Image 1: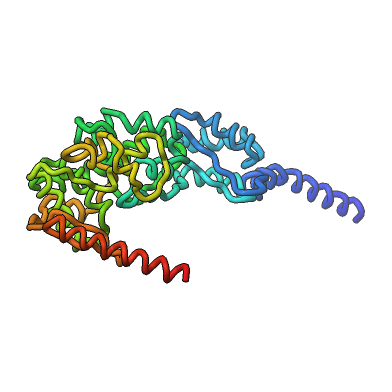
Image 2 (image 1 turned 60 degrees about the vertical axis):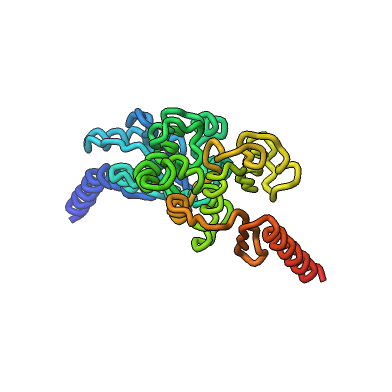
Length: 338
């Protein structure tokens, strides 16, 4: 009886010893990982499995780079470059599965209508270093890709949209994504207007910066088109601001007297015709307005102070409207400050 009991215990011990390696393997694969807080690993182009495994272990995402390498080779893992985010205590199985399924983490970056170069740069700063951004901003190759090889910058040559970006993308790839979207979505819509496509884009950017009201945009475009036809200077306030910024003064405020007087090739108070490039990303409605301006008698317009503009055919009428605008501004100031 005693001998039988000893034999049973011996068999049980042997059985436990036999399954321990399997249990250990299961725990190493399915058990909680060492990661204490969310971590992100970027897999760049050309990164090898060994490099990824070593980085995962170094960053505390997994315990064993060797075990990951064995699995990756057994499954013939094809690494897809991208940005991968791992949750705390993710198991080796979960980490491996995310890489196998290419569950890339994206950041949504919005490039809205009406923004200019400096705003685009700020929105892309986590993906395109500032110095690199300004170099690529002047890239003839990217301008050519957008469909306007004569453009001296990428101003206006990006489609307003929300883009899915990740840190495995090279800076030039990010910029290329934006200009390709412009080429596919915006460039065809510039055809068929009263002006050539690039001039249509420039005029649309002026209209966009003057008014967001879609119902006013054809009239604003009409005033500018009439002035162009008559050889009058456009005297567009937003161009004087753009000239200020290009000169290195990055005060993002309303135009001042010195801005109006500033002699600069982008300032339509000091030079005739359209500026050399757009001054912002125009909306679809601004582009339609620039393609078909509503040309009438009006040569002037001024803000009402209530969200819209008042148009006038003569300087005398315009001056009266300016006076009404100033009175409205004074009234609002009194209402605010008592």
